[in-house]
Length: 501
Image 1: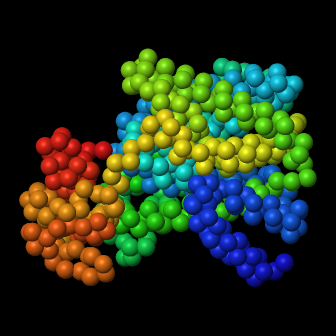
Image 2: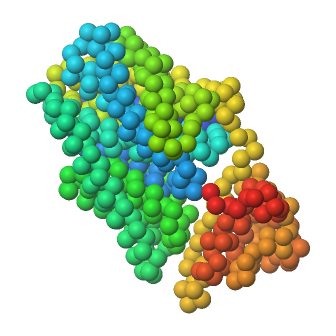
Image 3: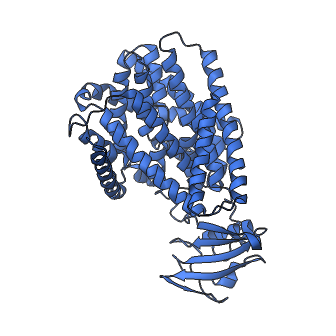
């Protein structure tokens, strides 16, 4: 086919995938299943487009995952996940180790496979999927701490699982050494963390002080910085995934110009990466080979969901409690166990041993493909019901404010654009009741497509857009006060709400 035909086909697939997102959103299904379906339909069993290169799939998949993780970091609110990070880190380390070992031991006996293959299968399935978790959980009214644990875990646990799969696939032709394995994993994680923690603050510092000629350049620069982090970490033999996530997390929570535009650009890039990734994985899969993987896949998936994931959560909670990081209630543990969604990441990871020529790796890929489809169908739509059953929902939790800023360099001030979400306690509050600090003022309100200058007695309404000019010295105080009022109303200070997280 000519380039024009490929462009037309690619555009048609993207448009069809975008249209299908609406259906997935209504049913509560992660959209990855629809995209995988498109890929299968386009493959050998459908329209006959050939794609059978695990090496190409591995490279494309890892790049797409880097984009998805960058978006995850850029759109994660640090104030929401800050208290959850210690427990999430334990889940992403201790939990991953428990998952690999326990699943390998169980399936080795149940399926009669050798130890090395069982360990690779355990490593491939150890990671929760960031795209699946973000797409489902951000629609649930969960308490910030619980939602933060799931979001941070899905961002952090990709790095150790990728390292584990690569090392185990390389060791599949020889006897793996546990000491060397742990040392290599630790070094790669430390290098990745160091790169991410260096590039993130440096990039934020530079972007705050460089006045770019067009606002559209800021989102491009931010996304490029995340890939500087990814590439730098990989060149230094570190974890590029940990580096890209930390860089995105730092940049996404820094005081950068045009943050809302950057977030929108990152979300669009991540959606495009997801569509391309899932369609490609669907093309790579062979439906003719799947029947033989159904029974082993169902056995492995059931063990993972009902035994391994709960053990990971319980063990990680016990370690966190022993290290005085806080206790996770049994209700939260039960929900964390059920919400460990597997998505594209395990399928991509399954291409690594396949591309390395590991014996039995094609069977691993087919089993993982079956597991992802079946158990995403089972877990994804039931998460709201399980959350209500366990009483871990927080229906009164106010949505976070969307704050966009543009620098007013000559005045040493920022122009904040604050969108009032439905359900916010800002609704009905008069301007003077906001009690903004000196140096800040609401200069304009945009309501129902009409803008006007508010008086001190003007009442704020849901869906209003407020334009607030704030000096650099009081900007953080303004944002905290607006978040506090959004959550607890004009008497937020009386109730002890400070808008800190």
